[in-house]
Image (cartoon, rainbow, N blue to C red; front, side, top):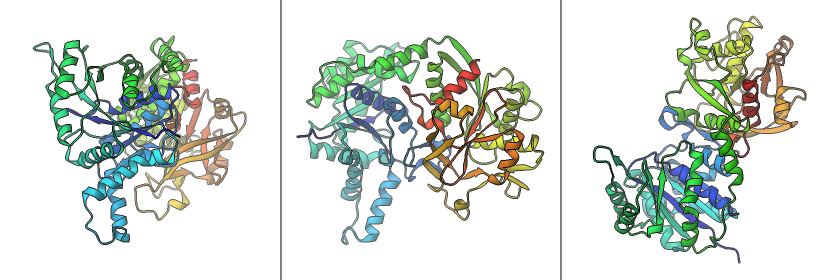
Length: 534
């Protein structure tokens, strides 16, 4: 008889941004390294249906899954740690929950009953939580609940967890509560009172945590751990320290030392003998922490004040850097600060230039100048999504002589729309979930730098955009020295443009950063760093 799926809930208290996603991903990695099938999902309390319409300043990067879901950036962490794709089912928002319940009510599914938070909203939340366990053969589903305990918008989620624990029993469910133990520098003390209050609020919601993970700047003493265990009604070995580290990739190693995986398995009545196989992970960490080279790469974007807006790109550089035994000194440069007077001074000294994705015309001319600087000075260049489009506009203006060339996203009546709206996007007025989203195939042209990077003829990559290269101009571009090295075989859309005469100049319409993970760095990033080192 197959073992039932075990459900682990990761909640947070005291303050937000303590790293529930990293703890969830780290525990998942440890269980996976023991041979278990594991997935992680995120429940987000905000009422947006998904983060696709959110400004990156609001919520950081919008991550895209293989099946085209626009999701929370924590799903990127899950994929980077586990090396496995997530899906629409791995991210649930309050907006999606209410949308589903209201649609059922409109259809008459509730047979005229009054629709309420309990049981209708909580039943829908529980259904979404159990969906992954029922449709796949997972040993563990780890569910991270966004926000902090006590938030009004999170209450239905905590009530759903309480109900699931009651329905499934302690042998199939477990709650890990992540809190902060602040260090008061004036008195030189670590304080446990915020943790005690946080657990009290959780108890008021009917949930007794099984394990406490304490974020801290300083080592926790045995006495402090005993105090927390006593006051919060958990076992002493269930008080786990999560001390600040220099990189998130150290956290699985720390959690192994703290025996988080062993404690989880014990509490769920499962075999905890042996050790997780973390040799490949430790090899990555060794290369990452002890590089032989260093390169300065300029990331040109317009959300650089919030690094989380480009988190998949910055993490991809870490993965690719480690493969090349190289520290990537990533310099975030605001494209609005680049103009035709200062761009040479701002960009000189960079070994490589990446133009980041984005929407809208703010800062667009700065990105175009950065593409020009990389092309004219033979500096390795990678353009992603809008980055490709800026490189195309720059080439059209300065090589093809089309001085007013642009994208119709920025200048709708440009005489030379080298980037234009996709045919099936014309007439679309809604913003949410209406782009080309998810994985699409691409055929690479043999002998190109893109082909050499991948070592494959056919690839699939994830997309999130509306505007495309205008094929009316393709012959002109190729005759002038910028070629289409990757084409979508189903509709002939250009996926990759590159300049063969350049040291390394590639623009891609897709998002390679979504497919890079710790043990499988993306080949384009790997080759971009290699070209930048040389």
